[in-house]
Image 1: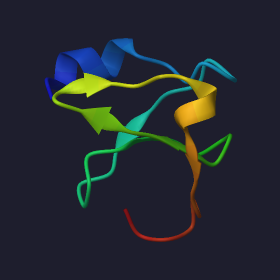
Image 2 (image 1 turned 45 degrees about the vertical axis):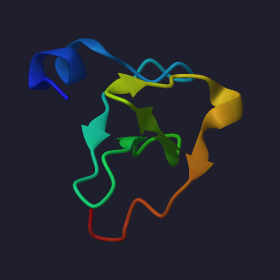
Image 3 (image 1 turned 180 degrees about the vertical axis):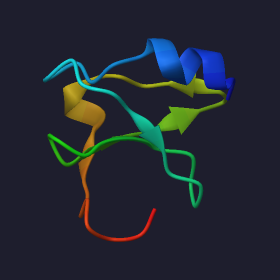
Image 4 (image 1 turned 120 degrees about the vertical axis):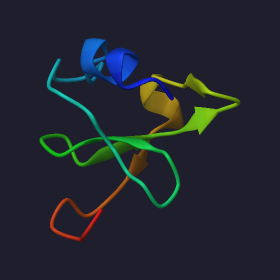
Length: 59
Protein backbone atom coordinates (compact mmCIF):
# COMPACT_ATOMS: atom_id res chain seq x y z
CA UNK A 1 0.00 0.00 0.00
CA UNK A 2 1.17 3.49 -0.84
CA UNK A 3 2.66 5.38 2.12
CA UNK A 4 0.99 8.59 0.94
CA UNK A 5 -2.40 6.92 1.34
CA UNK A 6 -1.51 5.81 4.87
CA UNK A 7 -0.59 9.41 5.71
CA UNK A 8 -4.04 10.60 4.59
CA UNK A 9 -6.11 7.91 6.32
CA UNK A 10 -7.15 8.29 9.96
CA UNK A 11 -8.91 6.07 12.46
CA UNK A 12 -12.66 6.28 11.89
CA UNK A 13 -13.26 6.20 15.64
CA UNK A 14 -10.86 8.81 17.06
CA UNK A 15 -9.51 10.44 13.87
CA UNK A 16 -6.00 9.62 15.06
CA UNK A 17 -3.03 8.49 12.94
CA UNK A 18 -2.64 4.96 11.65
CA UNK A 19 0.51 2.90 11.35
CA UNK A 20 1.06 -0.11 9.09
CA UNK A 21 1.74 -3.41 10.83
CA UNK A 22 4.46 -5.05 8.70
CA UNK A 23 3.56 -8.62 9.66
CA UNK A 24 0.17 -8.61 7.95
CA UNK A 25 -0.36 -5.14 6.47
CA UNK A 26 -3.12 -4.13 8.87
CA UNK A 27 -3.50 -0.42 9.63
CA UNK A 28 -3.42 0.11 13.38
CA UNK A 29 -4.62 2.85 15.70
CA UNK A 30 -2.69 2.74 18.96
CA UNK A 31 -5.10 5.10 20.74
CA UNK A 32 -8.16 2.93 20.09
CA UNK A 33 -6.24 -0.39 20.03
CA UNK A 34 -7.84 -1.29 16.70
CA UNK A 35 -6.37 -2.94 13.62
CA UNK A 36 -8.07 -2.45 10.24
CA UNK A 37 -7.53 -5.07 7.52
CA UNK A 38 -6.24 -4.34 4.03
CA UNK A 39 -7.70 -6.59 1.34
CA UNK A 40 -6.40 -6.53 -2.23
CA UNK A 41 -4.65 -3.23 -1.46
CA UNK A 42 -7.86 -1.59 -0.19
CA UNK A 43 -8.04 -0.58 3.47
CA UNK A 44 -11.28 -1.65 5.12
CA UNK A 45 -11.95 1.25 7.49
CA UNK A 46 -15.17 -0.08 9.04
CA UNK A 47 -15.32 -0.37 12.81
CA UNK A 48 -17.25 -3.63 12.40
CA UNK A 49 -14.28 -5.13 10.51
CA UNK A 50 -11.61 -3.90 12.94
CA UNK A 51 -9.83 -6.26 15.30
CA UNK A 52 -8.42 -5.55 18.75
CA UNK A 53 -4.66 -5.59 19.17
CA UNK A 54 -2.10 -4.97 21.88
CA UNK A 55 -0.42 -1.61 21.16
CA UNK A 56 2.51 -2.54 23.42
CA UNK A 57 3.38 -5.59 21.33
CA UNK A 58 6.00 -5.07 18.63
CA UNK A 59 4.52 -4.25 15.27
